[in-house]
Length: 82
Image (cartoon, rainbow, N blue to C red; front, side, top):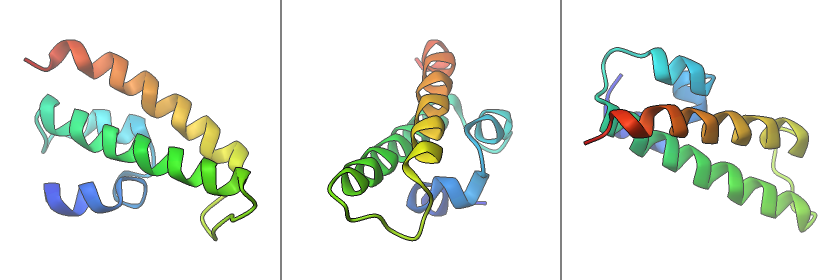
């Protein structure tokens, strides 16, 4: 898996934030960038759902849980980035 594809669709590329954390092919800085992209995408999905424009992705509850897990993973990876 390459960095560019992971940035386009982190959820599809990894399935979970924990899987991204465990991935060995990326540096901590790359993982942080991917997690930030994932966070931005989830936040946009939640806003769209709140505005009654849900997409085919998932329900807002699932997105909110994933967003929480992404933020937690960012917190764990941040100390590793220099």
